[in-house]
Length: 133
Image (cartoon, rainbow, N blue to C red):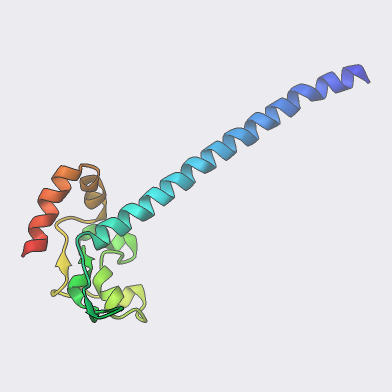
């Protein structure tokens, strides 16, 4: 009995280490996914303001209330960059979305926007110019 329990003990530890590493790796992926979702949301709505048209009511949604990023990388993100059209016509499938020229046009695709957002002074310099136009 003693030899059998000593034989099992290391395997239990190995199993615990494997579970701990898996949980740790999963946690890293969860944190990365949350960061990515928040960063994309930030880039899609940066500087956009809808004013109150009446107390408690926002003005009607327009194309310039969201950024559009219609670049080559847009095809690999299931038209994520056609964000303004998604807000204006939410019933459309992603393959039917189009670039609305009246929307704010981002200078880069999402990979570039996410990298640009990691450098806030550069992000502000590039994006604020587009907000003024």
